Structures are given as structure tokens and as C-alpha cells.
Image (cartoon, rainbow, N blue to C red; front, side, top):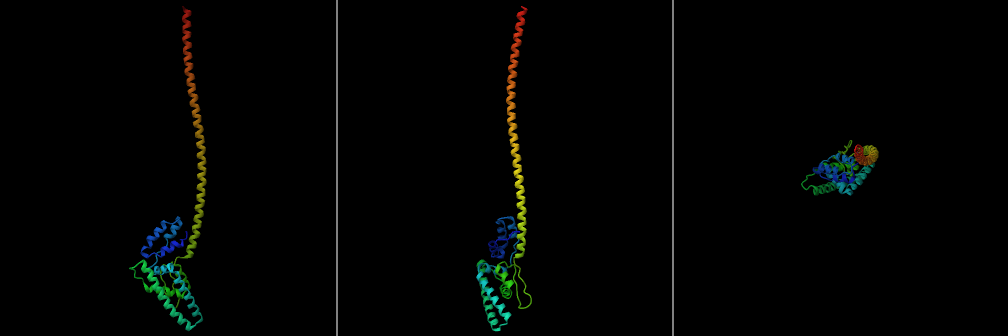
Length: 250
């Protein structure tokens, strides 16, 4: 299957969940080829909280970049066990997360004024992104389908996101389908060429037959005229014979 163009995916994942399905159908209909249309049609609708985060990642990527920078500093401080730095970074984390939640909600309110965004889910996912590089990477794509949370210990649940590995697999399948379609098209073109050549031969034969028919018709007309002339000559000769016989009898 073909990959979904980034601009199409951005537009869809910046669309509020209630309008996602209709926008996806419209994008699939407008796709440049069937494989791309199928890929678009398979895109899944995000939850409300995931949409709010996606909207921020797409519209305000610089805010998400700042989150990633702070996440790196936090991980470094944790590895080096720098208590004072950790406390300062923890304070920054609370400030940054609160600021990002406010920014995300503000963006969402412009799209959906009556929306009541799930603030706890949004904040939990942002905190999870600060704790784990993979979550942060996925958050930056703007393709989250569900949110994630992090309790500060154990494994971090990974939010669902458009799978790039699946996309690569789909791309290989699309290339194979394209090659098969190309071979089929070439075979069809060759068959069309052969059929066109056969039709030309038939047209030439038909032209020759028409010419032969015309010549035969003209010859028939000439023979009919000769036959009529011969009949008249025979009739005249018989009259002369009759007249001569009558003269001899006298």
C-alpha cells in the first residue's frame, strides 16, 4: 500500500475527531491513485485527548521541540543523580507541562469552542513524553491515536501511533502492485497493438475485395451490354435470312 502524504496526514490528524471520518473519506476520494486512497482509508481516528496533542504538534511544533529538549535534560540529570538539578528540572517540567496543556487547549478551542478536553489525559501523555524518548518521538509526529501515562516506575505504556514499519511494508507491497500493474499494462498495450495490426490487415483485405467486386460488376455490365448487342445482331440476321428465303421462293 502507498504511504499517506504528510500534508494529507497532517490535515486529517489536525481535524477534530467528530469530523475525522468525513475528512478521511474526502481525502481518499481525492487521492492520486487507488493505492494511496486505500492507505488513507485505513487511517484510524484519534481520541479527543490524542487529537488535542496532535493539533499542537502539527500547528506549534516548536512547543513540542522544547518539551523534547527538557526531556533530554531530565534524563541526563537522572542518570547522573544530580539532586539539585533534578529539583530544578522538575519545577521546569511542571511549568512546561502546564504551559503546553494550556497551549494545546487554546488551539483546540479555536477548532471546537464547545469542546471539554480531557486535561488529565493530555497532561499524563506530556509527562510520559518527558520520561521516555520513544513517547516523545511519537508525540512529535502528530499521529497519536491514544494517550499514554507514566507513574514514575516500571515500563512505560506506548501510545498507539501510525506505524512507520507498517508503512514501509505497505510501501513495498505498493511497489510490487505497481510493477504487476505495469506488466499488465504493457501486455495489454501489446495485445492492443496486435489487434490494431490485425484490423489494418482486415481493412486492406476488405478494400481489395471491394475493388474486386467493383471490377467484377463493371465486367458484368459490359458482358450484359455485349449480350444485348449480340441478341440484336442475331435478330437482324434472322430477319435477313427470312427475307432471303422469301425472295428465293418467289
